[in-house]
Image (cartoon, rainbow over the protein chains, first blue to last red):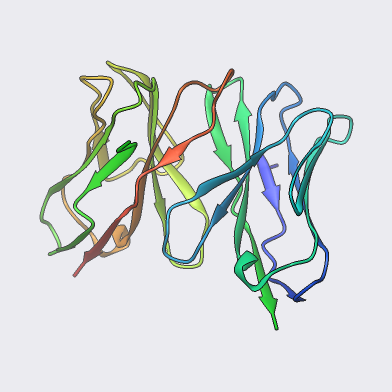
Length: 110
Length: 114
């Protein structure tokens, strides 16, 4: 089983739609969780951290489910500019490094 | 703030040539990483370092070497370039994997081996 798994997509959604991505992780001891955004041919950039109680940043909501070992990202009122690849990142306590998922591609169309 | 700086941004190598990809960070981060990303694919970890003098292999280390003599610098060396090493290379750093572990990336080096 991969340490971090994501549905690669693509998710094609119209402007204004709500879309959600999930990411599962294998190490129950992981403590730090993030969502990164990567635009085409650019470096990944931090979108938001994921806290145990869930957190929101504008149109973006992140949730953590420790029992089922997954994190989610919800995007409301999608914009064309949200089109990108979204990477799930989890820390690995056993190997002492950050593990990146392969990303979920989102395409928002007019 | 400079953050993570990678040089060069682009490079074309001939098969069998060598080169060093430079990476430096000014945030005093202990953790540094090298990833490669092939077109349409995810990041693959080549090597990482948890502090000066300490390096460890990631999932795709073959054909590469690294060193970490200072906290700031983490160069990646390709000794005998092969077409399979054509990729975009990203360097990243983070403070730790607990606490504030978010990673900051350089802008990438686009390498073509012909």
